[in-house]
Length: 347
Image (cartoon, rainbow, N blue to C red):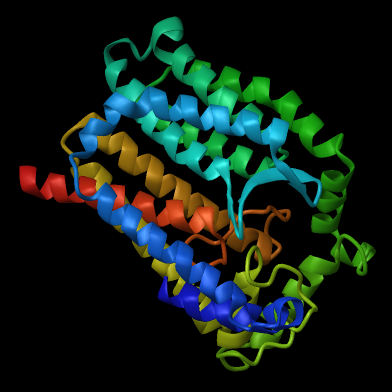
């Protein structure tokens, strides 16, 4: 989070001054959501996390209602409906839906453990809930989040012991949807082509990834210096959100970029220890879902910024400028610490 505060200001100051006449505009909003996230994390640590099982159904129901309302009444920005505007601030329901789905799946997979191999009683109820969330997120449209939710669901299904044939059938059923969502939608098809050869359209769809390459390439080993990036000067779009890793690479070099990656690897390691040490199944699934969500989003963001995968609109957890995502990532860590605390107490 400290790295995030520094890099959000460094990468957004010029854009904020040009747009709003205040170089700290994005930094102030980032810190506001960061404080809200810390408050939510402290609240998440203050009760027995097992009580969440009682609220798993209402949570997932409320999340789906928000997603439906967003599609019907949400504000369209850049061709997508992903946010509710609340005065000067925004709320992204898909972030609530991700955490709610993890809580719901952790609950239902725990309760159905005896019948986990049964298709109708073990697999189908959880698959329907996950499928509804994925479909509603796709309708926004937000393919990156939908893919992340699908992978997290698959991980939880696999660890819970659901029949691999059911998981395989689900994957096969998703292939036509993915084909339509990617290759039948013009701008996504162009993103795939830009991923394969961004230089084919350097001033169009390939512009962003090329600018990201230039930022990473000019950083070298130690970078050009904190605050000295050139690509953030209106060359690299979304430099404080989706492509903040590129500015880190330019200003702090390979050393800075690898350091961030090491921090996420350590987070994954410690988070998996929490999951392994949890003595109840709900805690195991919940901690695994949270760790999978955060590390997967980090992997997708870094992969997109370095050109390893096609561009996806997912922020870098804890570091990118982002309101709802930052808030819920920090709150999720509060739940993770709650599980760790109870695990140590039980031992």
